[in-house]
Image (cartoon, rainbow, N blue to C red; front, top):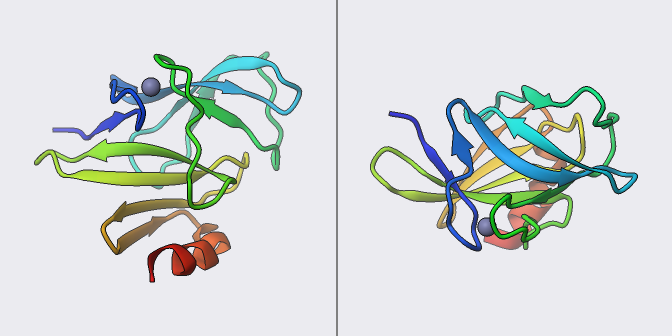
Length: 131
Ligand SMILES: [Zn+2]
């Protein structure tokens, strides 16, 4: 059974099929839907070809239900959602909002699991926030 992803604000499901669905805004203020892979560490992105995002751009992520900005309180470069595993254990998932930066953190209490080859970019925030 696959994991579920929730908006931290309204707790509606963000995952449909094999995608996590976000309303987003690119660097020039244009809105678009971005779908991310639910497997942590898989950085496949699905979007409309006319919705332009370049490597290094900071992307704003919003909940498609309540339109709240999905931003990490730990670092403004990270977005945050909640994940429920098959036992309904709840984790915080923080991931980089910078296009092409592969940094993802799965956090429960003081335990952190990291994903992505750029995860070390935010080790400072982890140390400050959790220790
Ligand atoms: Zn929401």
